[in-house]
Image: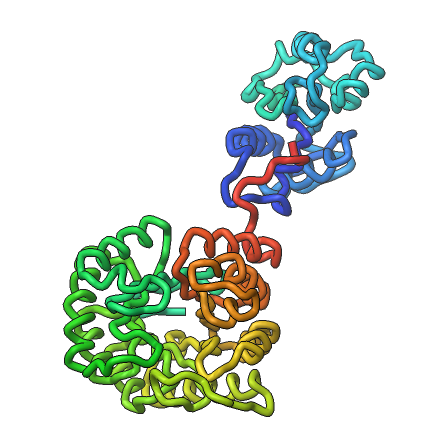
Length: 153
Length: 285
């Protein structure tokens, strides 16, 4: 079992608000991670990815392990330049970049990904989203998030 | 903390909105003297989110003597009306008289706010009898409705702590529930402006007693004298003092302006790490 979630720091308990700004995303992430079984290996690259992955695993009662995992949790997301208000401001290349990721994680242009503030280093390990159950596909803050699960690698 | 039938968590800061049934209080100058005007004021502060209303029938400053009978005429039926309309609202009554306290508790009041520091020794018995909360204030021993005149303290904060804690223990001994006792340094009561500033600066010492602390800062003369501003121009100064008291951990804020005070206290409560932000996403996407 494999799951993909974005490395969104707002998912961390330390950054909880009275009104959850990522309630839908959080629900999708927890549902996805809860399907990974009791031992979860986290594959993360972004600055907060490992923390977010570990936190989600802990919230569903799973252990984070280095080997002998029952499920793999990949943390990553598309560009952070989708809108004027996006963290990286608007870049006209961002939407096409994310659309290409939506088709396939193969052959990602790492230089362009860095320019577009995309957290894609771990995505190359994944099959395409077309083969996944995608439960979240949106860019609510100008950052492209996917939550997806693959039942077999 | 429990105020009558209403329980609150230790992390909550409460707004106590002032509702005057007086023709002559200093801030509103009789604006809510008519019963329907006072009732409209209650509706307004409830809509603004105040957890408590503090209903008073006698202004604090010197003036025409108001008998207990007259005071009861002003507040008892009004308390009953508010109780009937707002079952979830905490009703406090600002009185020092046990006779008035008993009548308002019978009509549904939850809190006896004794701004005059136990001038009537039987008030605690009334609070105990009705399982009401009591606010124990520090006045330096002055007679109700007198202004401070050349009052000196060796240490005003030590005096405020000693007197309010002694009053709290007297209330406890009389049978008032421990969770229903609140202390109040009573800014401007028996204090000059320097005293009130010092009490504000050292409020954490009162909080450290463990009794929940109420502060009544709203538009008072210590703010006016500090900034050279008349009544009606003291909101910013009030909010500055409110911030300091909130950082120290005061739990109840007796106020004229609910919305502004709530914003101030919420902001400070979050700075102090006692309240999460309402909705934080900046930099966390």
